[in-house]
Amino acid sequence: MHFSASRAVGLAAAAGVAGLAYASVVELRWFALRRAEVPVLPPGHRPLTVLHLSDLHLTPHQLRKQDWLRDLARLEPDLVVDTGDNLAHQDSVPFLVNALGDLLGVPGVFVFGSNDYFAPTTRNPVRYLLPDDGRRVTHTPPLPWRDLRDELERHGWTDLTNRRATLTIRGTRIAFAGVDDPHLEYDDLAAVAGPADQDADVRLGVAHAPYLRVLDQMAADGYDAILAGHTHGGQLCLPGKGALVTNCDLDPARAKGLHRHPADAPPGTPGSAWLHVSAGLGTSPYAPVRFCCRPEATLLTLTPRPAESTGFSGAGGVG
Image (cartoon, rainbow, N blue to C red; front, side, top):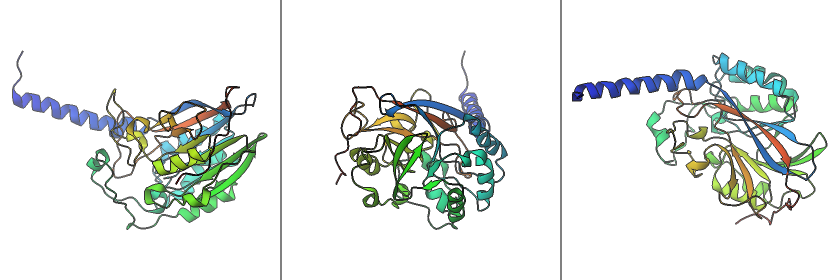
């Protein structure tokens, strides 16, 4: 059977329209809860659950996302880690606080991303498929990130913006190091550099964007796992291939999910860490599409390391 060229073009156009409709209507709101185990606790230790939230890009009218986020409290996590890009509108803060709901009664830590600081703006969506060109959107109106910080701190969450901190949760002592957004080059690695706390039961690094300079230092300093977001998991992915870009210098193969850093380092290798990158729950309001990359939150279960693992492996900062 032969098709005319015009009919082939028509079918291709129809497929493109259908794909765009699916990406902008169905998958954009098809929220997923991922689960993963991370063996970073001392042998014999009781597991802890960590809810990793990232890249909500929340606007007041996104009621379905707010309801889904509020329902996550049923998981009863031991810790919440928020890796930024929470806001996408000047009026989002009270809606976000309401959506977090009972999660704000759980111990939490947070850092911010560029979309907590600056309002989103119209961008060519094709740029999401191109390598990072170094341009940053910092000329738009500021978002109320200070109000968000104050609300999160008022509920007891810890700001890790270029800071180290320690929390004890259910008898487990957790040492944290966090940096401000590396995508904007706001990260102050010197402020958190140095060997991680060897007296802690587990050591976690936190950043919005998983740039290699941040991952390298945190891994070398002895952090057992690093949590980040920013990539949107690639946002527009290909079936069977996955992400094409990450909007940073992380390789696309690690655009989302649990991996090692460096990528080829087996568990227990000195100067290496687990890396969890969240694909996040949202997108810019000006690029509201996802394809083969559902919006997500992740419940990480921290479990004991194998008995032969040595635990702390830090050898000081890099550079």
